Image 1 (spheres, helix red, strand yellow):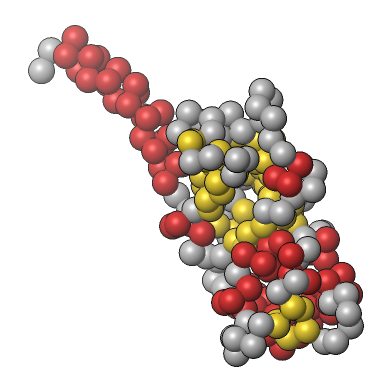
Image 2: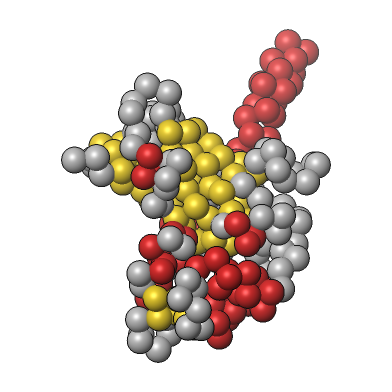
Length: 212
């Protein structure tokens, strides 16, 4: 083989290397760091202080309207189907996060407005107040397909900021746009919530902002 052909092939390999590394980076699982330092019983007590407003020892469907993240999975957490989430049921849900082998998962957020994909929207996942300091916020911007890849926010510990991952947990969701008028019910007075679980890595999170 001539030296010219060898040099040409070597150049091709060098050009291909960044592409290969990029593909590996995009498809690899998020690092299993920042283990959830969560006591399910303590978290449940704090949640009930905030959301069990009538003090009867259970969170009703009406009370869950303020507990927006629980509201999205209320029927799943309400194991006995009696229309109220007890301390035992909520604690069990928190225990699932602690027991999960995944502490961080990839999360793609799909945003539509009145059924149409919404590019260039700013999406932020904010931990419920009783989880702040235990899990951290995540944010991202939707691209032309209306999908945002979430990254850990500035409140995350040093070395974790910007990682393409989200902690398991309950979040309030805030969606804004630099040009479109997004109602307060989707940001400053959000009614949007979600639970991030290990399954989120596969199915993503979807929000349709209905404005009419």
